[in-house]
Figure 1 (tube, helix red, strand yellow):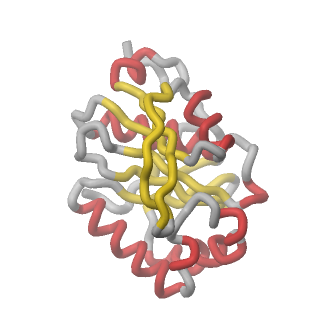
Figure 2 (tube, rainbow, N blue to C red; figure 1 turned 135 degrees about the vertical axis):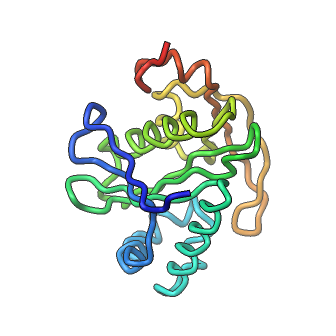
Figure 3 (cartoon, helix red, strand yellow; figure 1 turned 90 degrees about the horizontal axis):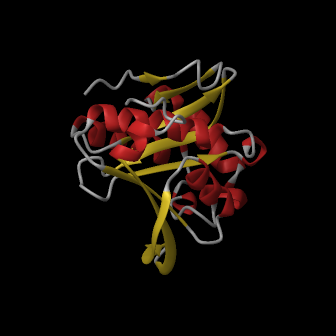
Length: 191
């Protein structure tokens, strides 16, 4: 699969795009993680494991391998020419377990970037896979992520226990089916 992919839709949001993560982005991604550790730590177990640019380079390489296998990948979120976070699709080929995930720098939250990134990724997912459902999983106390899911028409389907930072933790699972996506004006209705 092509790794030089850029996702954008000017009708959705002007000057906004997702670019598949590359080695030349590693320093910028690391700097943003490093500057937002306290903001990201409650939600992401990888934050404390990301200690150097080399760690981020390993992440980028792993994302390239995962993308080549058609299992998912990560994208840099760019708004008005500036990186504001990352977003990705995980477990793309596993029926019922495909997930969209995202994180934003603290000062970039509340601007609709996670919502716009999710729209682009969900559209890509349903346009390029035969899967019938995609999910967003978030901690029950991660209200901003729950709001993104709800605003985009994802339905809360369950609360399950998962492992987070070597501890069991509850996550809420929100799902969107292919038929809901096809009918949704948010995603550019296809029926």
